[in-house]
Length: 352
Ligand code: NAP
Ligand code: ZN
Image (tube, rainbow, N blue to C red):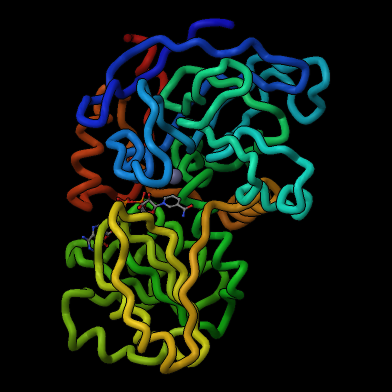
């Protein structure tokens, strides 16, 4: 074991602050990574503040962060995929059983024995896993991704969660040229969804509560922007969408969006608000429409997404912050005031 620097929360109402955590020394299959950038996902905030207490209660101290990019410092004797000095990335998962039907299908995110990057039982330490708000991490090579060499690293980190979470359902539901696609909520996930839907050739409509984001939405690749509080603007799109991705972090009316789907259209929820959403049956039954959910994506698909980003020069639009500004960043997330992802420059942790 060795000590790593990190930022952790001591409780649901405590700010994040500097700490030291024990990490395992790399075993034969492990890769040790010096973390250069870590994105700030709204899930970090939900988890730190124990907003998902019914589903995955938070164990404190909690070190969040699952959008990790860095440089390999050490590898175990059986590691073939990476060498010291390579760029590497880690997302929301760090282990799975590798033998169940989900793992065999490349869908590790549904493995019953999945280990998430933070706040999950850690078989190596007997505690819980600690995430990327840290100067280093040790991960089994199966869960370490290759980073395209042409991408900006601060903007690459958010691809590991916001990127794959929006790419995967779009591939699953066949987003392509000729499809009309809606994106609800222009935050970290939403802005990546716009970039991917545009790159896949769809006609993209952004639904936002923030009129100030309209120009950005168009610049990011949207063809149209609807301010969702304007019922007249919303009704112009009734019954017209093939697919809508809902990436909203708080309570909102999903029935308004289900009504915008065409026959057999699908609305996929990726946002994970604290409280249950109200659903009217009529919106679904009147057009054989479907409502579904999606969580991140498998490791092979995450690598496919990163390679796609390398080919299309896609990264996240980031505001780079030092770790000392992370509590302020959380407050701004709650005000929908992020353009469009905070990416922590982990060099700032050295001064702690
Ligand atoms: P974010 O950057 O904070 O963006 C959320 C956006 O939702 C805001 O920018 C805002 O967009 C909109 N919004 C916020 N409050 C709203 C309200 N009361 N009514 C309507 N719209 C509202 O968050 P994120 O990091 O993209 O994450 C979004 C959600 O996805 C979170 O719940 C997160 O936990 C979840 N998530 C799920 C997965 C998964 O695998 N399924 C992965 C990562 C994250 P506008 O200003 O445009 O309205
Ligand atoms: Zn996330």
